[in-house]
Image 1: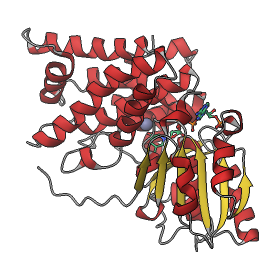
Image 2: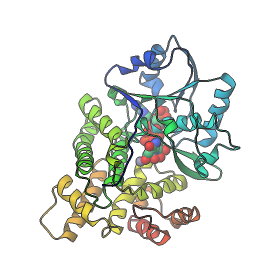
Image 3: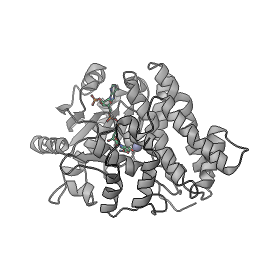
Image 4: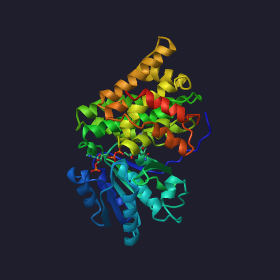
Length: 384
Ligand code: NZQ
Ligand code: ZN
């Protein structure tokens, strides 16, 4: 096992009715900026619950954070927060609202010239406003980590940063808030969480059996519970199990002491920036192709994944790996998420993905050895 330091500071407040806990979790003397997305929270009662819990707090609202949050929108919130003397940010919505809010939190006290440098140049985030979260879409794990992914329209980019300063102080996870998710978003959430586990599990063996089994537990739970949540959107137990699985997929525990990949995510972010595919759609396309292209480097973990998660064993190693790649793709498709670029109308200009990653000087994958040719080959495998 590799060395690691584990420190996750987010209080997770899970279950029915927990939005009411906001009154105690948000500091009494805070001047709160409540951020949200395109309005789903106003249709499903979440907005009213938040406002009621915060009736004795000072709250200003900022709505309109887009899926794949835009830098330009976030900077409007930064200006508003500075003008109003905001001291606390409360994100109410999905991963995009929360990621945007984390960036806003880091940009407000940023001492450099341009907060975009946090994303583009890795400028250090030495302080940030405190962030709280009411999560309505289980998918990203953003509710219990220090990552944020923000997109810019000009020049077209989708970039991530990490800072310990932007872990949410608390996240309220009430599975009932997810009853109103459209099936596309429910499926996206299951695929995203599944891919997060694979990025941390499908690498190479470092004799970390506990982390392997924790990862397998999350995968197996998603395989069992994801379809139930899709079939019956108001199945509380299925929603709760999916929500907790998605949080656990990217809250740090399964990453302890193991190598991590993230190549699929890097390629996926480019596909979203260039073609507007949903984040999870890009992962469903790219992951099976990454497994195929990297089947030798990932052999021992692919065989373990085949055996323990899908019960595929007994044939030749090659046959088991072939079968598990097919099984993974079938699972994504069974949720209604397409797995080929052409199915999303993406047929032209795919080589730009590799060009853009190369231009940033990035070598991706758990061995940091995937370059332009590998990316072209992977995207070729999932083209049609
Ligand atoms: O904007 P509103 O009106 O709220 O509608 C949203 C949005 O249209 C809707 N929605 C959310 N909760 C709902 C709901 N509709 C009905 N009922 C509810 N309860 O769902 C749509 C998608 O929301 P979004 O927040 O964009 O989805 P998600 O949570 O999947 O977030 C995706 C973003 O997170 C980034 C992705 O790249 C993408 O930008 N990621 C963040 C990560 C992190 N911070 O750790 C890691 C991930 O790998 C990922 O990159
Ligand atoms: Zn993801």
